[in-house]
Length: 185
Image (cartoon, rainbow, N blue to C red; front, side, top):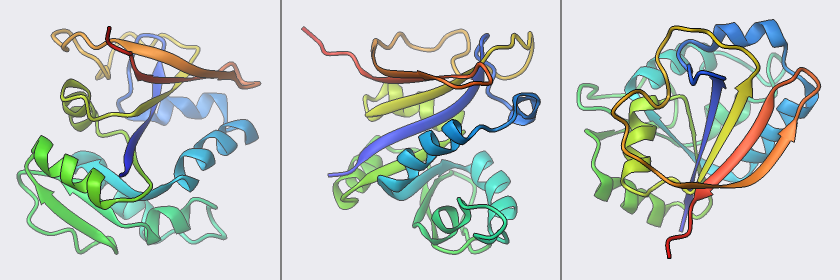
């Protein structure tokens, strides 16, 4: 059975929208290794429509020579949760699952032997967390307060208890915090 591992870039105040602000901190070798661990253990990618439509043109033409992550993003089967897309032909190995349905996600988890990687896709991630379908939440927290922008967990997000399972600090001040669902008593 597959596991869902989420990866997000967030500011201290929880902004994850348009992470172009992360460029000010650079991308360290340690960060690359951390993300590589997530992708290497994954055999599928799950994305919401907005992230899919941002990733498809950015990744579909990239080569391994340009970015070592290109083979993972281009060759790995991708599943898109969307109530409006009817096809995902612009990016190889992509399938539209339809509107969010927790049963469809459970079925996907049963069909995938390894990890299922998610990046961005805030609406999808919030729904998956609410339905108890996220197995691991990886936050790369940047030492900046942005003050505006879409937050990963906006007001009204349902309370969800998590347990810290890992942490590492990179030389640029970014923290990698790994969470799993908290054990219930």
